Length: 326
Image (cartoon, rainbow, N blue to C red; front, side):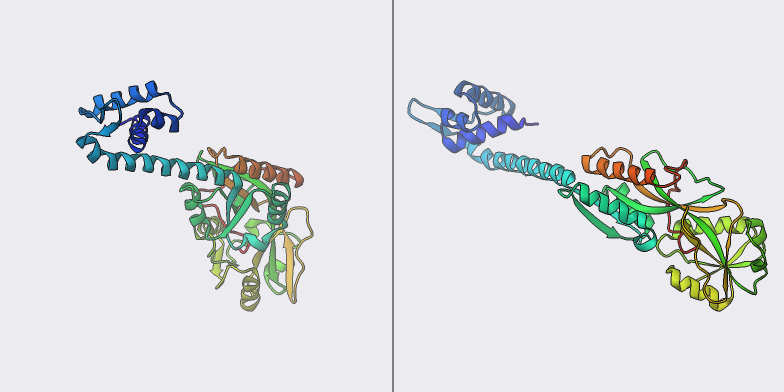
């Protein structure tokens, strides 16, 4: 209904009780201020000032309207300050989330964070830990600029994600089977998924990423595999559970690194083909062109290029997940 420039001019003239002094506070000339006040009077339908040769006075209607005009100007100034501060803060910080399992799961996470901090010390990096689907919700609600997570690939394929998500896969881990020495599978040199049909596996409950762990369990069921859930997602707890109940379990190792060591009476077996893999990914919004977020993406691309296989095709599930302890 009102133009802010007209309201501001009215308040300035009313405060100064002078068109000349009021115009000067706004960087206007006296004729410009007069024109704006007249335009506002036309919109309001009543005069605002009574001018004589000696002074300028407010009309009775203007006296009653002035407090509302001040509120309009103050509210707009407050909104401008907020948006300006928001813009500056977004240039100077990155809010990054991560499920608990990514904290110690791979050195790639540390490489990403350390390289970003070293290169852009002026940008504040805010880290938060949470369940993956909640981090995804925060990203969608603009409460996060990005988050780290794992995606599961079966037969080197990952399910597509919505167009609003940008996903950079930075490192890949492959699965090994850890099984008791007396287990029938321990007699083999290598393992294929078909070899595990009918056997019971020890599996993480996936407390950090419950949605995707269900997808992984569904994939295991499609291979006619059964599973028992360990009490916790922590790797040590899963290993203890598997050893105590004499069950096989998976261990994940960054591709190209040494396989896990066998402990006690357990045997480590490699898979004969690339059936079970996970990627550590940085997930951001594809429409986020903020400079700090773009810099984080660029470093994630560098980290991906450092790996042997680079950025992989495919994108993670909508509910991207923790699968390191499966």
